[in-house]
Image 1 (cartoon, helix red, strand yellow):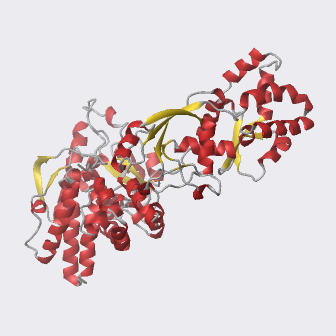
Image 2 (tube, rainbow, N blue to C red):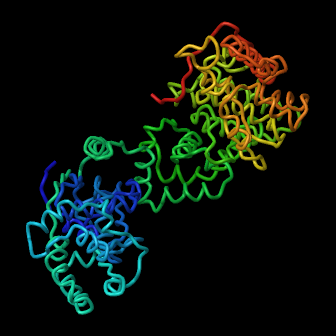
Image 3 (cartoon, one colour):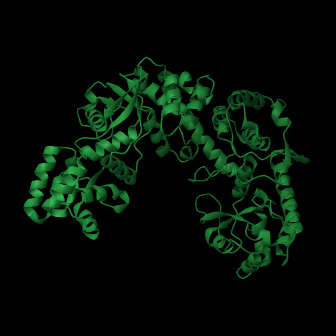
Length: 585
């Protein structure tokens, strides 16, 4: 590993020309215009913009690609270096110095002159100009972004807009200024004593460049990237697989995008692309551990199994949505307890469908699949040791399909725990939200269909005892927990807006203006609030005791439903720790 200092201007030129390229795993261009403008201001001021990390030469596994905005000849050139850290800054530099990005950047000369006039800057006083230039920053809005045009130079005289690409070439800048001053000779001092000497980008300060050898192993590259890059993010297994498949003419990122656009459910199941890769690995008889996907995946394995894996996941999405309220056809909804269940359960459903089961046999097979799903949430099974359980559970499920008495041992040991302290966002909380959704709930006030499903009215989560109301009731102490799944229901957005605070009895009274008590009670029942719990909510004055009574009554309703629907027994004493996020060892 070596380090050096190079002109940022020269580095941008190399990126534009193709001497610097990007490895396929690099994340795409993401900077907004405000960050590009801040970079320009730093370059103008000579401020440090951070070190860059390069890999010498081209690496077959890292499949070079050109920068956004690079010249048309860039793909044909061999790269001297691959940029591991610095893509955003160099791409922004290309947009600034070559104006080849989707937006072009301009000094708004009228606005800059207006600021000078407001501050009464004397352009013949060099010290005064230097102080002005130093105090100026991006918040003064002297630099603006506009949609790309084929002739940015034409905007100089017509609109007083000086493109930053002109600032990058001293000859071009002088010619442009001459044209401008022919139209506006009174701005000569402004142009030659401020713009030309202090805004030129023909020369830029040097930046530190760290270079690592081309023979460095890909795992080591990822570790170095994590240590040195400015985001501190480890390269994901998916990004490494992208780089492995790219030289085999497989654009994994694009194919994942196509799958997401093609399906109804998959898009909401696999935010990273790693779920599809795990499913492919399992179809190919490989371990699905995410960290090992770069070692497991190859072009033959991927090409052979990508379509069956996608179809299996899409079918599972439909099953979980239709039978367990998972709402995988709705964007931005998270009601699946563990993403780790997707790959093995998709293969399990594929196994069911491949047997062409009919009638009662198919119903019993799908009940086993649902029991696996619910049992994994109740026991928080995929919290640790995930990849080992994925393979084992799939194999056990196939045995269970063949023999009803061969239920996996872990499922036979699952009981329904106490639900009192579980968060809405933990595994059990997500399960319960899905179960509520599966009952096609209705809004208490309007009786409109709500929930997260096609055709439902816009729905929001609602604390039945609102969080701002709870501290006002008798016996409520600081530290008492009200943000629990048993204090959550769904409401139509308009109803939730009005019920955000206040006594639940007032909410029921409002509902009574448009619905009779029987209908209101039934709408609550659909969300596991039976008549006894509903009557607690109707009490005009409440205390912590009433809150606790309501929570216990609702807990019993949900426990009874799970026991009856999925054949688990209730453990009336065990209280599990609420865990919000799965982890993989």
